[in-house]
Amino acid sequence: MLELNYIREHTAEVAERLAIKNIDATEILQRILDLDLRRREAQKELDDNLAESNAISKQVGELFKSGKAAEANELKARTAELKVSAKTLQEKLDTLVAEQNNTLVQLPNTPHPSVPRGKSASDNETVHSEGQFPDLYEGAVPHWELASKYDIIDFELGNKVTGAGFPFYKGKGARLQRALINFFLDRAIEAGYHEIQPPLVVNEASGYGTGQLPDKDGQMYFCEVDKLYLIPTAEVPVTNIYRDVILKAGDFPVKNVAYSNCFRREAGSYGKDVRGLNRLHQFDKVEIVQIQDPDKSYETLEEMRDYVAGLLRSLELPFRIVKLCGGDMSFTSALTYDFEVYSAAQERWLEVSSVSNFESFQANRMKLRFKDENGKTRLCHTLNGSALALPRIVASLLENNQTPEGIRIPSALVRYTGFDLIS
Image (cartoon, rainbow, N blue to C red; front, side, top):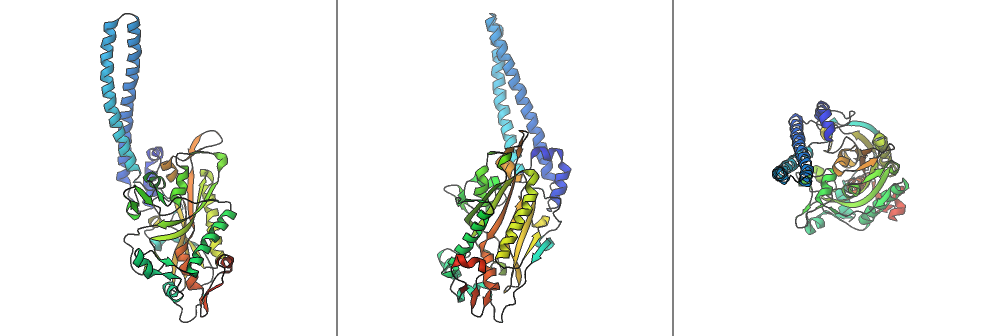
């Protein structure tokens, strides 16, 4: 959530920056300012009321002490009127505050000045690429056919037991999943991240804290009876550990890593882009989350970008890094780098990670603050990244490493899988 003071003092700048996300925020910004004015007026009325009531109470006490009971009783009648008025004013103020907050949470984060303009993924800016595209043998097939051939992933069984988008991993397919999870976790711990095993469901406050609610309400699985949401990423529970927390400057950087199942309804997804592992409703992911001093968050974003690049390098996958344009960015992000690996059999790029800086957007929602060296309380900056999401990594590993003899396992994973070939 954007800070109200910043909106009030830099309204034109906020509108201009949100235009990079192709959002005309003129109307909603004016509504926020109008509500803010009415809220401050109501607050002043209430403060004046309470001040008058307190002053009269002191006068009443003094009049009674002086034996002027009649005058004191007249003033007491005024106090009763002020109490009734104060209750009405408080209700008015509460309504305005709620309306203002409900409006503020509908406003996306403003993008960083370096974010390119654009409307879709085709307008994203490639900032780095490396690795050689594999030269596959004649007869190479996409991963869903390899999964069936080697009996390592069963999409039909998942459809039978649950529904489309919930595959079963079997035999060496299941071991490959487990190997990747352990590989990613071990690498993160070596890089100084603290491992967390979070719950897979969160309450509404947590969804609001990291910005999934109300923006992505329809994309999250909801448990109606318990009013809990299945997590779309470990970012949600891990970042919310620090909701309503005040850190110290010496605590930075706060670095956490978590493996979890992730659940996304992906409503409206269809066609070839969702075949096989390309888009699932349940999948595994290792997530890195950092909380940082605002003055160091963009330096940290670059470090996280380099870290994820190192993972893909170790897996021997050709990849590229793109800076998302305004039209392709998330509701909460100020700057996002996407990592895409090349899928040789599908002959296209598959997104496998996003690394983002949210600046103070999530922290303001969560009231996540720190005391700086001067004792001033400020909002933290939050960052997160997939390190990595498994489905498309697995798809690329299977497709890019297929040979007539079987599917080769990258050397970095062999000590985790216990085998070097799926055959």
